Image (cartoon, rainbow, N blue to C red; front, side, top):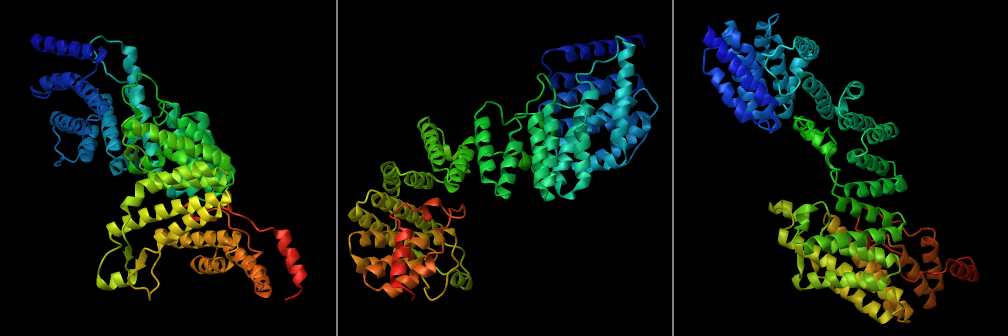
Length: 592
């Protein structure tokens, strides 16, 4: 008996030395745990054994070894039931812990079993087994457990008995952490449930927890309100999240999405600008947690729904969005600067051997970025810089273009049982569109420079590329995707550009032909219709010109849209007709 007491004291001292050490490892605790489990279970040693298991499982959890922690916890629950003489007849952890907890109620082991159950709760949460957590919540065990662990640990602290095993983590802190992490994860999974989830998140925001976790509760409250179609209230919650934790960049990103929904472009641009600057700061993608914390909250915030809500695009992706938004919403000079910064960053990463496409997978392909930047430079009246970028696109794609691109009609493909457009044809079409768009932009540049012959040459090169695309069944109307819509837009814009250029050098017959073809390829084009009337007027077909102008003059050139690439839209970069002069011509002609 004396030898047994001495051995128990020795094991307790070993546990306390390990728990007080600077470097905690599950393996050293596991060796001690194996020593204890190597002898028959006994009530006198149970408190020490449960304490060592607790320390071992905390270390396993800290290293994300959740399977190892759960296996040890299950074995411990079974060993407890051996001491109590109970046999639940199953190895299901939920049943085992219910039975084990019931068997130690009112005994000295109660607080240790509650502490282990906390860890089992954490493992379930880390492995996204929310049903098991929900079952225990419905039984009100976790709330009771929280109070019991707190009271028992406070009583134990007052005892100050030297032979009590030391724990590596205060169970009270573990309970507080798990409660708010559970509220966050469950809130992310149940965002569409409305006010019930919102009230739970608001209650969690008042709990003692790191500021980053409190910020997450405000973030989820905002997302819940956004689902409830209450964007202004959602913005208030996102603002609270940022006030609580200024590094909560996901709240800023969600705010930008709300502003986009509200079509508040200026606020969206401002949010994107701040978000980009924050993403350039170190450690902004990870929540700021207290230093020295043994269990990081991120261990328990692993659900797919939560990860989706917390995800934020890369800094370069945000910079691209910012550049595009600025260009589309008439802040062209700012957009140009953003595009140039983006291209410089991509070039810098490429020179340092970084696989750019892997790091910034949400970015468009480089040729498209060059074309978007070129369109912005064109709108900023910087034709030389635009042409330089277009030369880069042409140089990288021209030699890879197929002789022709054959696209089958989608209806015919379905009847034949074939799939979508082949990958080879699709890639060939995309490269062809990039090259054609580069020639189109260069034609616009020469038009700005009033070099009409060069403008005609480059518009013609664009057209010659576009006519290489053929449909196998031309009698049927193919279902046009985005690329085919861009194809038609480029045809219409290049024909309009060449027609306008012909008009500048008094080749009116060619101008009339191209402008008419442009109207057929792109009926929504406003510039082509207006210039078509101008050419008719110069050909002394004034009644037709007046009728054309009356139909089109009330239609403004449409604003830029995000639905299509900016380079495939009317950029208002060419020569414009004087509205006062047109009205004077109509007045001179009299009523038609």
